[in-house]
Length: 444
Image (tube, rainbow, N blue to C red; front, side, top):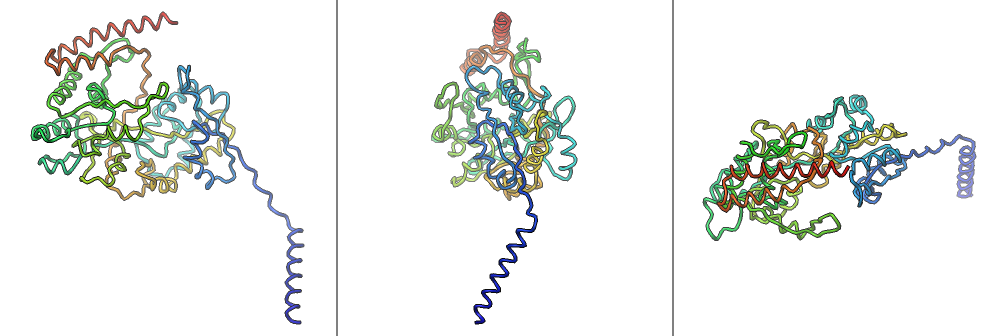
């Protein structure tokens, strides 16, 4: 009897709760906001950022505006193609490259986030390179923010340095010091030793290394208006001489590896990378590379170290190889600026930095969110400034690179002096540049 009484009481209690529930006012389900995001491809977006949005913004419906067509056949200017998509589709949030960001700033298509950043990110410890670069515009304003960045450093094979009795590299080395260090290996090598003092992936011709060093020194072979060749100078002569001497000694060897052609794009797969990755194979004493090399060195049988990338002695704190992706920006025409900013604020948060920095060897802009206990990453954070002048796209193309490599080969073979080669490059290069400008004007 008592058992049935308990059951009856429970039934009555359940009914009373049910009735009370029917009489109470239930909160209305929160309406989902739609956030239009311009991204290369919907599949790529969800692979990279889908989990973050699902976890942090469950009440936001994502609508991807694909931008993959801006690099398609017949597209003359990919930046203008992107700008057309922004004008027509009016996305709220953009994921931009370092080339797209300054262009859209110049077109006045991005929303000024300066007051929002000053309000919501005032306590954030951000790498100075990031903010300095993003403010490189006439107004000095923040039209974008980047949660992560890429840069490079100088890796060295400790085992080879120990074997040959060469002093380890140090932070702040110049390119001349790097090449002179590579020379110490060639001076000690025997015919049985098969490695180079310096090797770098994707440096496929002698001029590639010349250009690499010149870029560190902010040298250009064209004037600002791109009408004059400016290669016959003492600064260029010193770099040419440095690289040519290294080639003659065997300190440096360019390496041509043919990737797979897919239309107009060359794709380098894992097998191509393995052929080019001489440092990871223990066949080079030094190289300059990004954090991805750290992963490729896992399990190798030699010890290695890393210091800052080579610097210009006139600007020893300036990074040369600094790249940001993605730059997160809000469009001026977007209808959901508040939602777009909430997303950006999360990606710039300490929480996101801590989560993301655990994934591989990534570099987070938010330094106070960095969690990697890896001293090998420290050199990537040490250089504090960058070369942030917006580089104008070359207005004309003319056959010059083949000429440069041809002249370097003649000097290496003893057929010509460096001075004579630069004099010829100046005169013949100017002739070809003038012809290119004439053809460009005639095509209008």
